[in-house]
Length: 101
Image 1: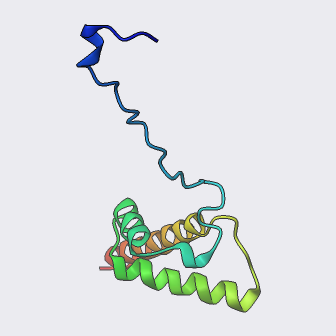
Image 2 (image 1 turned 180 degrees about the horizontal axis):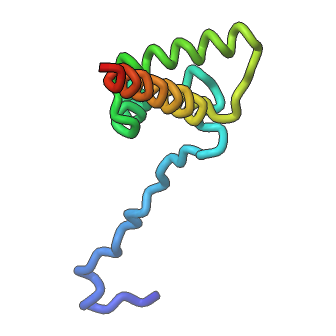
């Protein structure tokens, strides 16, 4: 390539497309250790429960998996189900207790 006087002052644009590390979705939550506070907070917001309630259900999930030998493909989804079922049960109990008054 032959440079002209106009091209000499111009810099070539740098490649700003840096490779970002991509976290594969498949297998992301394949270990129970991959769940942390960020996931607990996210689940608490989704189901409108407290973070300690989510931690309690996480402990239930860990105990269930250890006692039964059960393994999940996605522990995040399993924890969501534990929290959802627990929240539904508590809301039913509260509604039943209020209807008895």
